[in-house]
Structures are given as structure tokens and as C-alpha cells.
Amino acid sequence: MDKIRLSLAPIAGFSDRAFRTLCKECGADLVYTEMISAKAVAFGDKKTHALADFAPVERPIIFQVFGREPEDLSRAVALLYERCEPDGFDLNCGCPVPKVVKSGEGSELMREPKRIEKLVRAMVAASPARVSVKLRTGIDDAHKNALICARAAEDGGASLVTVHGRTRAGMFSAPIDYDTIASVRGALSIPVCANGGIRDEQSARETIERTGCTELMIARGALGDPAIFTKLQNALNGENRRLPDPKTLLLRHLSLACAYKPLRQALPELRGQLQFYFKNKSGSARARERLMRSQSREEIRDVIEDYFKDDLSR
Image (cartoon, rainbow, N blue to C red; front, side, top):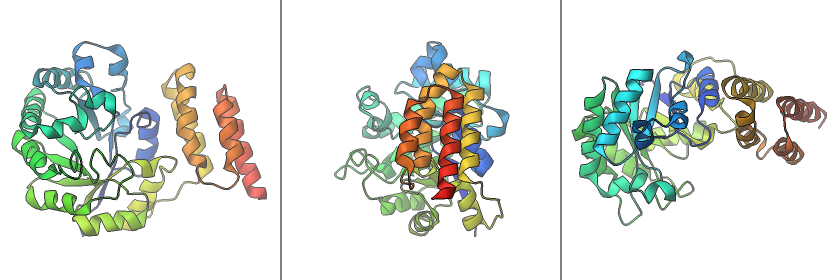
């Protein structure tokens, strides 16, 4: 059986440098940045450029960009490649967030397959890095056109297409449409990556069996559990990686976040990110409450230490 390649999805608010590094350490083959606005890059926005910062250990790394004008995408890709030389660029055609959609970007691009082709061509021409595209199955159940959009991406020169197995209307909770992903994989000559609903070995194997894909993208399944990559590498690829314990992962996440960002920026983001490590765990309500009130790195570390000390006594 072919090796199953595992990637960390571009998750807004989560797929920052610290979390990407942690997931790579746990076994992710590939990581994607959070969405980067092509227009903002073209206009030299410093905050946007910060999203493109990464450590060498994260390679191979893909910059995910969004926009709807070929000139913006071409300019952004050229600038980002000159500055950072990422291993690839990914065009977001799947984001369902209203503020992105109302600008005609993200999943709204799936209404215009020809535009997707033009955008991909512009990106391909702008740098030597590979270009991929991330899609949903469609806008809604009445307008599932992932296959048409995927063919447009391939015609534009994309080297890979990722399909999230839900429509835009289905957001992040609808059942996964494996059949549409399978139809895209069967029709394209380039690799197709399956995304959506992969949270453990069982869901990963079901995705592989029902879609035929050997590329899997993990999103929410990695939140609070970056060791999912360790588990899946061992289960799917026969590796023998040591499984990191939750406390070690939490402390490592805290350390990386505080190393890569100013404390005033890292702490508010960490409160949202680290609470997933406690989600649905016994006795975690108090730990989450303390976490959200924490005002320093030391306070967060105390929350972690106390939780696992109490955990041993339960």
C-alpha cells in the first residue's frame, strides 16, 4: 500500500508557527499556514506578512492564500516566494466565513470555475513553487460542483487538489460526502487530498477506503491532540513513533508559542488554543476556567501542572 501522507490543515487562529511546529514534531508530513490575504500582501501589510513567518523545521510548508483577482494572487505569490521561498502555495476556494465570502473569495469562488483556472494560472506563473487548491464539495447540496472546479484547477496547472467533504452550507458539522471526493479523485490525473471528519484511526481508514485517497488533511482532529499525527503514522504507515503524553504536549505548545510571539499576543491566543487539550476530559471544567483567567505564562503553566497532578489523584 502507498504511504499515507498526512497534512495539517490551514486552520484560522490555530495553524500558527507554534502549532505547526508541534504537529511536525508529532509526525505531520506537511503543514499549511493560516489564510494569507493576497491583496494585503500586495499592499505590504506587515501583520499579514507575519503570518508567513516559519521555522526551517516546518518544511515542507505550504502558504495558503486567498483572493479573487489574478493580479493580486500573482503579485502576492511573487513577493512571498522572493521573501520566504515556501514549498508551495494553496489557493483557498473553500472558506465559508461570511466576511470572506461576501468579498467573492473563499468558497464563493466555486461559483466561477473559470476564475479558479485563471487564478491558478497566475499563481503558477509567479513562482517555481507548486500550486494547489482547496475546495468544498460545493456551495450547497443543490450545487455540488467540486468536480468541475477541480478540473478547472488542474487545467490551470495545479499539482494537487484538496476536497473538504462538506458544502459551504454544511460548514463544519454536516456528514462527510465521501462519494464526491472519490469522484474527484477518479477523474483527475493529479493527486487529490481528502479533508473533513478525520479525528482518529477509524475515521482515517474510512476516508481512505471510501475515497481512494492516500493524502489526508487533518483539521479539527488535531486541535488539542497534535499527537493524532503520531497515532496515524503508526497505524496507517507502520511506523513506531513514541506517543507523547498530553502534559508534555501542552507544555511544549506553551513554550513554542511564547518563544515565537510577544507575550501580550501569545497569551490571548493560547487561552483559546490550549482549552482544546482539556475538552471532554474528566475534571477539566475548573482547568479551563482557570486557563481563561490566566494572565501570564507562569499562571498557564500552573494550570497545566495542577490539572495533571489532580488527574493522578482521581
